[in-house]
Picture 1: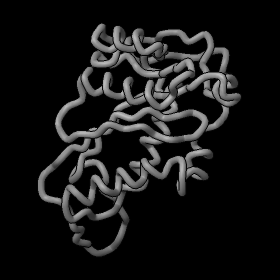
Picture 2: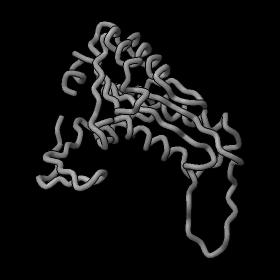
Picture 3: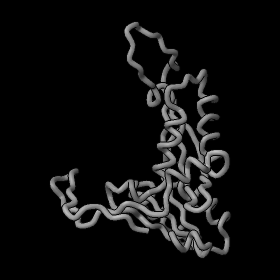
Picture 4: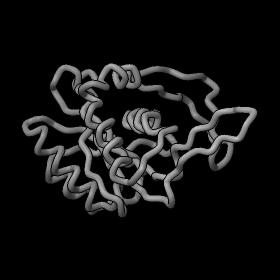
Length: 201
């Protein structure tokens, strides 16, 4: 992180978001009388693989409304390599099958991009998760008349992470990440941290 802040390297966090219109973004309020809320008929999904620049907070995206595969990840790698020519690139990403495969790792090696896979169950180490949470907050409790408006709102929120929304994103993404030392497995999906939590850069 310090090297990225000084301009010696490019540090990006890669992750895919799946925004579902008509499902994920309903609000709620308590009242004594029944309220009718306008909703969209059916469900449509907007996939947004994105790579967050740790320093500028710019998010590089490739979008579709079908599926995310290794092909989209490779397209993202090429986009990033073109943007950061002359700089070593470190890309933090999770262990999704379409990301941790030869179809992605081989092009990354040719593009001189280092893939830094985070451990399982460690979303705290992938900073783009904060952007996903921010965008979902911008979408929640609002009515969208059609899928085009829904996509437009998402694109606008993401495009402005390094512009009009940068103050908000700076608050979400600090200068360190939360690390859990001496984690011990309790069962398959539960872990304990007896020695507490540490912040590290």
